[in-house]
Length: 142
Image (tube, rainbow, N blue to C red):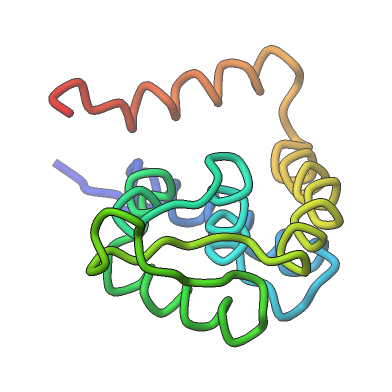
């Protein structure tokens, strides 16, 4: 049996992800904003003020990483932190006005990033790709 790593799903997914990240950095319009920071801002924008555990679930980012992201976004005045009303130990993340404005300004660029990432695919292949990726990440045990 000949194992060709370059034809394995993990390798191909990693290469596709690396290509997507390069496209993101070239086209997002804000060189200081990383993809993970952007999805964190989008999660708060879409779901409203959120706890760290809610952000972890929404973004699929681990706890240590989300804490660092939150600290960096707070330092840039894009989010604010406050204790939860009913549990002062829980931190609630909210967008600031600057954060809201950045999300609104960046979303069109993010749509373009997705478009460029799938530029080599025809419309049917795009639908199939998204369907298959969702199916791969679906964990029915959750």
